[in-house]
Amino acid sequence: MKILLDPYIFLWFISGDHQLLTNIRDILRDPDNEIYLSVVSIWECIVKYKLGKLPLPESPEIYLPKQRDRHQITNLNLDEGSVTQLTNLPLLHNEPFDRMLICQALHHSLTITTVDAKIRAYSVNVI
Image (cartoon, rainbow, N blue to C red; front, side, top):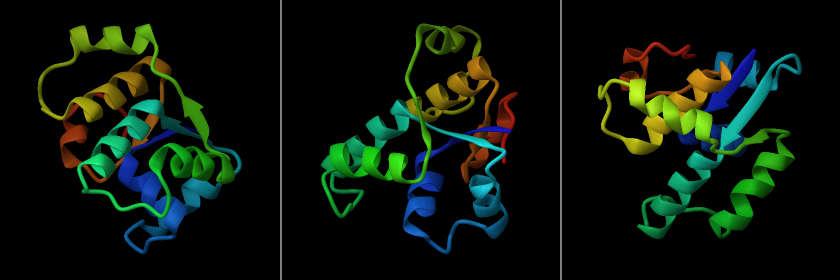
């Protein structure tokens, strides 16, 4: 399975947070699955860090890629094919970062792991 992490799932996974359900943790640790973190999630985390809403042990431009690599998570860049998915995406969710993750998941045939119930309203695979 090809899995796209939302920022909360990524942060809970790398920190060992108990909020991450055991079955999700097991899926992310399964070597048969391909795990991705979007540059959009890095962008969102940096914005929240700068606003004082996301404490991190190091500056996000250092900490987040380091943790992504440490946990063998593949970087997913934002590409034109994903962005153009926006033209067909209904406005069911007002969060632009989440909308772009949905577009990336649709374009690259990924399953999103998220705790955001609004994402389930879209025609995208969700765990």
